[in-house]
Image (cartoon, rainbow, N blue to C red):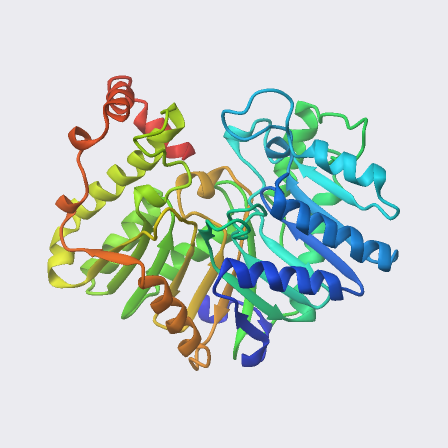
Length: 435
């Protein structure tokens, strides 16, 4: 099926790798400054911090210089209306948006997209920075750490694709399938109204049918944009499964939080039994954005990295035979106190998925996700993808045995207490579905 999946034709030189968060930030601001027609930004959040303000100021300057410039920013509604985890009071990012737009000579709209009634049940995880006839695609959101503004960074993937047709397809989907809906809220309006349950339910159903519309080709170097929400008729999920099942020789998988849905885990296991070589790059628990160092005050959210590590340990234990045969290579990424946020799959050096999906049950069923599948049958881009992978592995440690990952008994006392309570309540099954 993948061989006949339509995509948008691109030239080999149309895609560029930005590699670092600093290069991503510089390119994003440079493109904003040069924009002539439109700027559409879709991200989980745009933070009220130095990097977030830098992006907003660049957008405001571009709009002031060219009032006809069509600027639309999409963020998750619930995430925008709360502060950081543990932060009390009304400190959501929407307060910054309103303040800046009220003062601006040429304001623009920032939209809050309520994918579900609560953040826990699903968020806007749509990705893409569309500027004129180009798309910068990354799983990154916009704040100091993602953009490496003050030293620390959260590593992601960053690709610049010059394609007017791809940009048009992504803008069209946002305009028609998202922004026209009554459930969408303008966060820049002082008197925004929270959507009711009926509006949210109807919006979720419409989002589940959202799609990118384009005139595609089925041969040559091409990019297929994909979007999905929910378990049923999710084109992104089904394509990911088909991609894994199609592997004939090798596969390279990146995910920050190792907790694959059962169908994906089973497909990976079956490929191993077929003799397919699989490399999996996952963040060390200390490179998780929820990790709390032992010397700092602990909170419940700090147990998440340990839950993910236990999921990885169980998977490796089942597949230890493949590790010993050299078929399965699990690489733990860690670089100082930085964090890891990469996602994606490459199969047989010919097909490459760029996505913001964490390849976990939450992405599979709850969040609105998208991705770009690059078809490269002639391997015209293989050297670039191989270089990206090698740069990623520089800060990785290959695990030779599942016992190299810690057990519950080796965790700090507060973590053991929480995980033991979760086990007693048998809540781990539910947690795996929403994490």
